[in-house]
Image 1: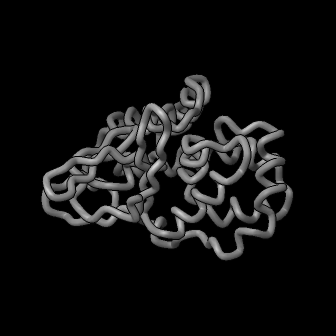
Image 2 (image 1 turned 180 degrees about the vertical axis):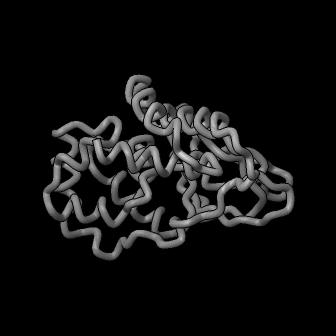
Image 3 (image 1 turned 180 degrees about the horizontal axis):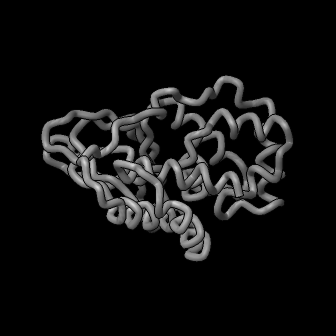
Amino acid sequence: MYEYFTGVITKVTPYYIVVEVNGIGYQVYVANPFRYQESTTDIKTIYIYQAVRDNAITLFGFYDMLEKQLFLKLLSVSGIGPKSALAILANEDHQGLVGAINADDVGYLVKFPGIGKKTAQQIILDLKGKLDEVQASQTLLGQQGLDLNLTASSPYLQECSEALLALGYTKTEVKKIAKKLTDFNGKSTDEFLRQALKLVMLK
C-alpha cells in the first residue's frame, strides 16, 4: 500500500494528474487537478490512497494528510464512493463541510454531485461529531495558479468546465455555472474552478 509519492507532475488533465517517480508515471485521480502545475523539475509530494478492485487498481491523490483523512472519513459512509468523495473535496471550504455535517444541514450536502437526500442524511448519521480532528487544510487556500498573464479567459473556462464534468456535475449545471463565469477575471484554471465551486454552493 502506498502512503505518498514524491516526484514531478508531468501531466495535468481534468480527470487526473501524472506523477513521475524514478522514471515511472503514475496516474493519480485528485479532487482538483488544476491545483497542480506541470513541471520537469519541481518536486512535489502527493499523499496516496490505493483502491483495489477485481478489475482495477486506482490511485487517488491528496495535497496533504488532512485532505486524505477527510477523504477516508467520507469513504467510510455507505453510499459514498471515491468519485463522490473527490467531488466533495473539490470545494475548498472543508470547514463549511464539517460545519454542515455537525449542524444536520442536508441542504448543503445535496449540492454536491451524486449526493441525494438519503445519502446526505447518511453522511450526517455516520460523521456528525467525528470530524473534529479533521480540520480544513489551510495549505489548500491560495495555492499558486498558472500565472500566464493571458487576457483571454476562455481556455481556463473550458478546462474548468471539463473538470466540473469530471467531478460529476451535469452538462446543464456546468453550462449555468460557465455562463456566470464569463466575466470572471481569473488567471488560471484553478482560480476558475475554485470560483465555480463557490457558485455551486450558493445556488
